Image 1 (cartoon, rainbow, N blue to C red):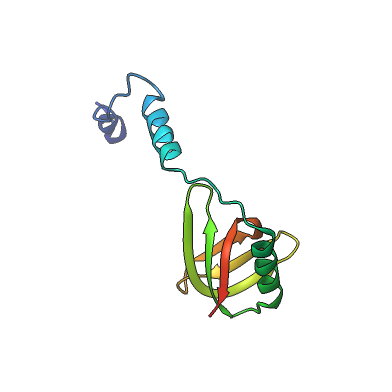
Image 2 (image 1 turned 30 degrees about the horizontal axis):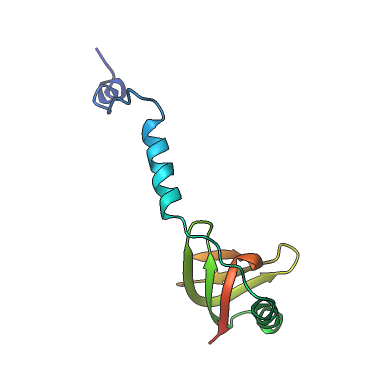
Length: 110
């Protein structure tokens, strides 16, 4: 008699080409990937200046690169970590997003 777990395994999809579906997903991700923009010296300086004056609990709007595409987050600043060069933003009272300074494309204090 098969255990419930073993009985369930017999109905799992069979992957005849091990890793093929993972390779397809990775290829799709690469095709969706946006190129990172090069910021001018003026843009970098503006971002740096804003990061220096931001305080905890300030509401900010940040455009940033997540490694695949650009995203936008609006929320309150939880913490600025100058050692790790990152900012932590509370986007909806439950989710905290950590953004590295070098991934920031634009930042505004609201």
